Image 1 (cartoon, helix red, strand yellow):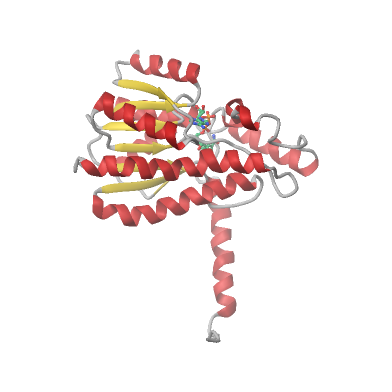
Image 2: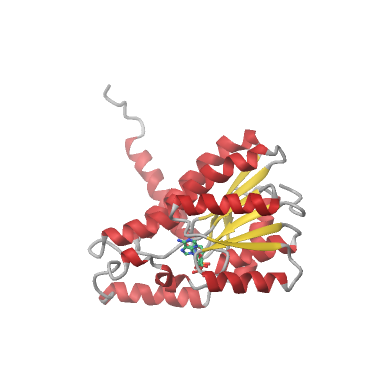
Length: 282
Ligand SMILES: NC(=O)c1ccc[n+]([C@@H]2O[C@H](COP(=O)([O-])OP(=O)(O)OC[C@H]3O[C@@H](n4cnc5c(N)ncnc54)[C@H](O)[C@@H]3O)[C@@H](O)[C@H]2O)c1
């Protein structure tokens, strides 16, 4: 989608971090942006911050893990701007740990915000983007953790899901004039590690049974340090704008984890090599 100016974008998780970075970049490129987030006060501030730059933005509160609220946010976007061209499924939470620490609540919450909401976003906004015939773009925020696994299993599973959905949709939606990109950030300096500030009341106290200790605590510390030294979300926003303009299938933020992904591909290839030349019994 070469010309973003004058188009309308709907961005989830837009009150903070990467979502706010994307909303900033798109509005600076001349798009009208509907900011969507669960956090009322942060949303109000984000909107005021962008309006102070003369950006054409509005805001709608929604818990995207509730389909009815996402649908209502889509209705509000149409009521405000008439059309929508760009969907950014970005809201996400870092919930759940490795084997042995799982809770149903952690799986429900993480899968609900990180994956169900992305599926529903496509279901709800896809037809709206198609309807005006002007083309559009869908970007969904997965993670490097959507391409290499280990650590927080619910997070990994949800993010692999976002990658799978985006790769498949890219093929299906191209003939319908909609480009699809998946954003796979490495560490970005955001509030992701305090995601539990948005834990719904119904899951309060049910997320993690014990505080992490031993090797797990070390891992958490490394992640914390990674996020603290991570990329500026405004830089990530600019990359996403560039990705939309040039229809990039994958949007990465740096090469820090590239060798891990290469190692995964090598292990997959080894799996094929092991059975190469064998004839499957039928
Ligand atoms: N920060 C990183 O290092 C990093 C790396 C890879 C991927 N990501 C992904 O980036 C995306 C954005 O996260 P971030 O790092 O900017 O964190 P963040 O916490 O700063 O921003 C996330 C935003 O999503 C909103 N949100 C959370 N639950 C919601 C819900 N149910 N409904 C609507 N909005 C909700 C939050 O209020 C917040 O404004 C997430 O999908 C995250 O998994 C982040």
